[in-house]
Figure 1 (tube, helix red, strand yellow):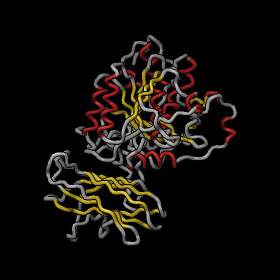
Figure 2: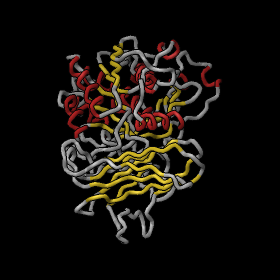
Figure 3: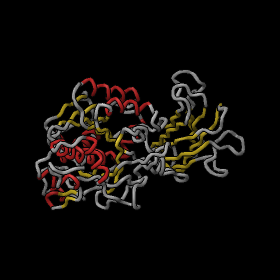
Figure 4: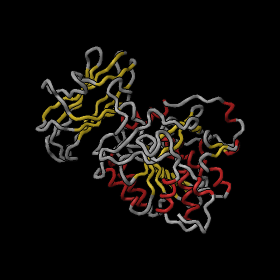
Length: 438
């Protein structure tokens, strides 16, 4: 399966943000999935309450989880980590490097081994994502949780977004949609169009008409630009430029003149011909109003004018999604690439954080990092909470409130745009008994 450059860049970033682990760390484990700190049942570490609920025989029984992803390569090593009760809803045409969704499935299988997994392939376009959700609906079975470690870096980024309407097709039936916050905090810029000297180019700062990224020779850069205009009939036309140090450049100039199927999107890509700083510029081609608000995402870190806040993707911004940020499993500190809120319309995101830096068979000898890894960690926890809560007669809404209310506050006191409400855990469920009230 071929990947669109946007999604390929995201997945490569996840793989590149891995640390080598010592081979001795695996010696005492039957499984190659190591949740590391703060959870290690054999070592008596259970900050999140996972081991305690497993000891009470809660393992995800009668919970169905759908994993939507682009990559599901499975070999003999990773297969033994997966839930036995699973449905592979994809064509087996993945290369050995396409393991992203399989790694997510491994993490869920370690926390909730008796959950039913439905592994659904999504193509990298809006249409492909919609088709994946429609495929789930056509299965005509209850989907308790969707685990989604993918996103799109162009949209309206608000409640009216097309992507949010797709998610609602499932959440309105009671499904929990758990989405990665994204790993875009170091490569994001947001701002209003400004052109003080009247030459048509946006100014990111006084007299500064370019964002800068550093690239080594042959390194790949992709930039995604979108702005607030009528989705599907955009009438404000802006172009995106990428300039190399040697004077070569590329332009993205999609038409936006008010016709059907024209969206306020530009996408530029560049393989570095030389080593050095590359310049990203926005130019007004034809826009009657100069107050466009831009969202720009770069696959490489921005050297200047980077904005961590508002760096959420389209799915992560949806109110229907429970959005998960990434904290390092050992330190519980927010990963510096984990995207941050709030949403453009001012809502708190992410909702919660969960650990990344998890060992999986799929990515050996590296650990799986990024909010992509944090989502299945959170999904496994929610599966155990749903199993026990439902057994005791709690509604799903009550269970969700308990999960949110019991989050461990990290970072600045109170809810914030990096950690959300805090670290997801199961401690409020450990001593929960039939006579308990929420």
